[in-house]
Image 1 (cartoon, rainbow, N blue to C red):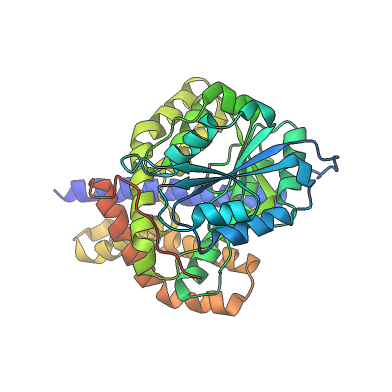
Image 2 (image 1 turned 90 degrees about the vertical axis):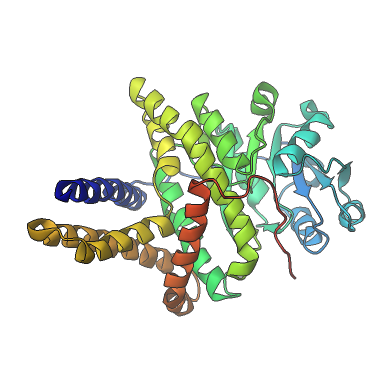
Length: 396
């Protein structure tokens, strides 16, 4: 029995160490590897901007206005709003702002995946060069489409935008999320991009050239449709480029209550896709010596930041509860160092955000955040997570 505990502590320690070392590797890569020069191109790409929207009358207009203000020719942008099972003024707002509105009414098949497929099946995609998908609660930086066009002219086929927060200082919750998202957008994803690895799709700010859409269509309908489509693309040897200069900012939930249904859906979807595709990607990558696929499996198989920290703290605490005699202090120091490094990652994220002191003070709420997120992850792992789409509450 004693050695079983030792094996468990060592196995979990190795798993968390892989996660920490991998994150540290991406941070160092981003720091030491030079970024590719951003060349200037004359705009060529004709974008179909698809906006799946379910009862988004509060925020949709802001997105449409931000698209109109793009530093990109109006003649090369087509706005397409999918009013998906709406009971409000979403369709009217889309039409008022010059968008082509596709109204869809199919209550038994709700969710972004179905809305995207409906749009692709009801427009002549051959007219366009690329499809750009944006959530209705977002706004675009004025250079977003220009940056996407540059990546496409350099050969990119699938692109993920910088996916940040539009309301980073609204609450302690948004401050913590801003640090986490900023670390990903400014450090981790650029690190992958600099060495030719694949970014992962984030659901918002996804861009596909016509050939990808024509070849694969859209076949992701789970609550984790972004992770699902990402896994399928990488299995097919498609690399997802991360475009740091193409920025889309979304409205984050302002508190735990508002975020719970959304995060439960995301967590459930991510774990389901990890179980279905994570080890397949890893095996395929090892078997065929494709480092891009090995790397692509890690975001699915390794813990998210909050879960990684929660697991580390739990195992550190158990070191003092379970009798481990001579090995205890080796394990204590092991988990202590893992915790320190993960705190350091958060501090690196703070370095890149605005209002640094406010973001640092938000760490006082980190225990609440981690307990809440760990409960959601646990529910998702055991299969209690939501398996259907539920709308997130909106506010102005």
